[in-house]
Length: 617
Image (cartoon, rainbow, N blue to C red; front, side, top):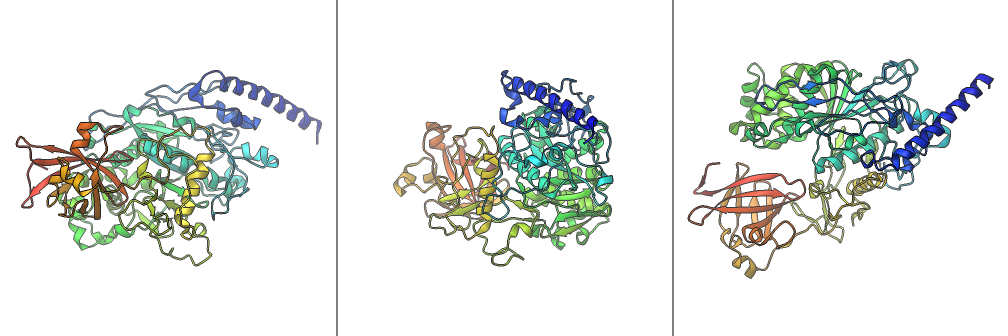
């Protein structure tokens, strides 16, 4: 080794030691929001990303109807020369760099200019200790508070930026964008998702196509929620409350709106250096590294079985695309989608407009269920502009305790090598004897994201009693792995995987309850959908989605005596709902507000008599 190289190495080591001292001083100085622990600086070369933080200040319009005003964006904040990141300021939006990011090749194209989404490369090493297929019991992640443990011999490589394209001639880089809101419900999901994104990017090796990551978070007035300390984040001022309310409180409309702001605000658009973006959701967990499977002319997406258009929706398609046809609408939504950015820019306006139109259209509701209307807004907009997708059923898997077999996976095969994403949209419900609890039932053992709307799930979740179905087993381990790797995972009083099942009260208690005693034989709407029927058999109801169970709430917690007397629980389709009833001047039950346990989604119900609502819908 040349003498000059020895000198350079000695200088770097001295510089690194100083850096550690600085970071530890910050760690112990009471700056709690920084959440940097001593364990986060065990590798001294992590200075670049701990120290540089650039951001975009995003403020949206406060009066937004069909046409959404472009967000006003101030200049990005420059990092201090001493490398210490400024504290988060409420109301500002930050896009933070990766730990280990920056350096001479801070962008995918090899520019020397560091960006707000500079990424670190990672060696293609897998230190697996978990016996479950596709999950690894690795130690902590590469970002505070997520920790990853790398082999010592890979220290220099793991802290270098992503190599330039000249060193990776076959690379076709894409920027992963996680769409989210800043609720507790989506915060913990984002942390689990990001941990596994980091893990799979590392597994892909330094020439991975998975080059950058940004959480695109819609929040009240663009206010930061603190997760910019964990992952690169751009905050967008969410749609005004009155806009969301006028579209039946459909918060998912913030997804196309956030992309509109991102792509049409020059300062934010400049942060997406790659030619492709991969749109993910908070309840996605990557199973294996994803190569760029898109081209400029063909996006890559998941084939949703419930999104196949038929003649019955043709009139809906023509309402927004008069010259179009249902036959041209592909069974895809906006996530997961890997797409050439110019194609996304082409459709983003119509994606938002069509989604808003569908969500305020009672006639469309009769043929397209509300929860997929924004997906239809995307697919109709894409068809209108000729944006085609490779719709792949292997892009993701959606499983549960009821899954009997996995398409394309034989006995002994590893499903994680067949699919790219685990989408945990469905809960897994088991009896403790290992048998599925049943359709639309809450299990004695239950893993369902909807349980955790107001609090984070606890660490070290009990594994499912059934070890033969690999899907719930893998997912529980994936959650546990991500939570264990996070030193700053909040303490929680939420239940784990047991205790969620609620049982019917005794017949005598039902008869004595001022609300439950009057429900048998009654019919109701649910979010405008007909109909919820309370049968003559106590504790049993029918919904448009299957059988339901209802019972009494106990006084305690957030339910006082008045609440217990006016509220029942109604559990179906894996969701726990608390229904609080209202009466008219004569004391008749006329409507209810349902609050879902977990994400606290609210739904209004109206009583039907002779199939007519007793109060306006």
